[in-house]
Length: 307
Image 1 (cartoon, rainbow, N blue to C red):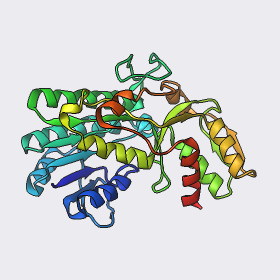
Image 2 (image 1 turned 120 degrees about the horizontal axis):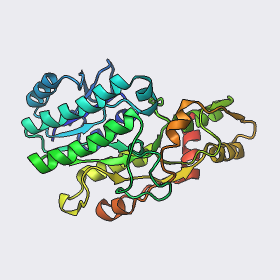
Image 3 (image 1 turned 60 degrees about the vertical axis):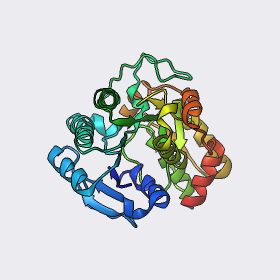
């Protein structure tokens, strides 16, 4: 099986690719990104997902059978540059789906996000089907991507699958311009003996997940028997929810000298639109989703690796 990964140098892609390589063989992975870069063990090609002709040629020439489409502009960066967010998130997703359809790709995996929710969405244990009225360009484009995946599945028989990620926490790659990046930055500051200024309010509760669980959930969904899948593009995954204040308190238990000040900026307005927790029961039922890390074990593992 030949697998294409777009957005390979991003936070998610740079950690997904080693897991895919270990599972399927590194020779089977083709990594692409709009930036120049290298990922150990895999061939890397510079490519812009907004170029349909380039995508079609690459998929055809390489005999791609499965695509993990990770290229996207995230929430905070999307509000800084909504034109770019629309181009990459909307046009890029359409191009991936169209190129996959036209070249007999067997499966396309497209992660979505809690950014699809809006201020009218309920706050606690939110199921996949709920009130969804996003107010950010990131949320609008990712919700549209969910519908596009459903459309290509229904209309053309392309096996499209997706899930909605909460905030993702990782020590291996730098934050990618998301609203939940404070969590990574705060843990890194504590590990390095630095103080930290948080851009969200102390009580801004959001759902989160440790990156190893995010990677395993993507692979598990991609490998699931299609007959067991009751949903197409909007499975929920999450491991725990916490506030910046709660994270600070846990870090102080391990680093008593650590200090945080809270100075919310425009990203707090984005966070206010998102739920506090997600209902993941359908993911557990249909394809066995079960995160390995809790809140405390995530912090301990982050601090160990950063230190």
